[in-house]
Amino acid sequence: MAESFTADSTGFKPGVLDRAAPFYVAGHRGLVGSAIWRRLESAGFTDLRGRTSSELDLKDRAAVFSYFAEVNPRYVVLAAAKVGGILANNTYPVDFLTENLQIQINVLDAAREQGVERLLFLGSSCIYPRLAQQPISEDSLLTGHLEPTNDAYAIAKIAGIMHVQAVRRQYGLPWISAMPTNLYGPGDNFSSEGSHVLPALIRRYDEAARQGLGSVTNWGTGAPRREFLHVDDMAAACLHLLEHYDGPQQVNVGTGSDVTIKELAELVAEAVGYNGAMEWDTSKPDGTPQKLLDVSKLTDAGWTAQIPLNEGIRDTVSWYRNNLAALRG
Image (cartoon, rainbow, N blue to C red; front, side, top):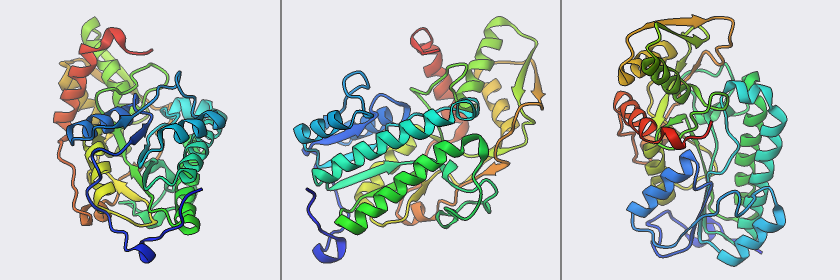
């Protein structure tokens, strides 16, 4: 079982992680996990551990416990999750709720049993109320109704935050949670049905440019405002938090600025070289009117985003085109 120690009783303070210690990244092949893996490698970590879903099904509790007993990681980042855009979340809420709960409970319980010293649980900004005051502070959690198109996924992520807080209270392990805004970058899901808004726009506009289409139709009105963070920035923030932050409250991770979906579509069109007309299907849902995170807690911890949105989109378009043949969907 995990040792019972607390920051108060042992004088625990965040600091530089041991680069030679076993470090397990759950979900290391996904958008976020692969970026964290790259960041850890570049930072000098020499004992990184990861398993693909075919090698280790994180929904299989016995298999997860066995793996943790074998590896005995000192550090863990839980980046594994079932994720998707509005359409996928709205169509398959049971899948998003049950699969994420299973993954989280198995990994967090196994990590607790092995006494993992530092664990970072990654959630999502969709945990906050649909009409939360903007920018959204960490204190907004559980103060209002969730966005109904992804409430099942949000509830699973809220449960993860509560799990981390409960482990801190009951077992004293200095685990933390981070809530990123909308992420994008190399390794994203560009499938036609499961992608988030930015990769979906990249795919749509790149196809339109290659096919010479005269117009592109996007979902909704284009009016909602969204914040976007390059996944390499997210990975840098994760390592920074592990080495500089300790506390029970989740930490928002974002840029502190947002754009309308129309402005985002214009940036994508420019990046792919599309010059046709832009149209909007207003019968499709917009989702939350605005979602901008208050990142003052992260700033106070000494970290700010570095990659401008237009630069990040160009980088992502380049990666997409270079990997088009191998992309899922």
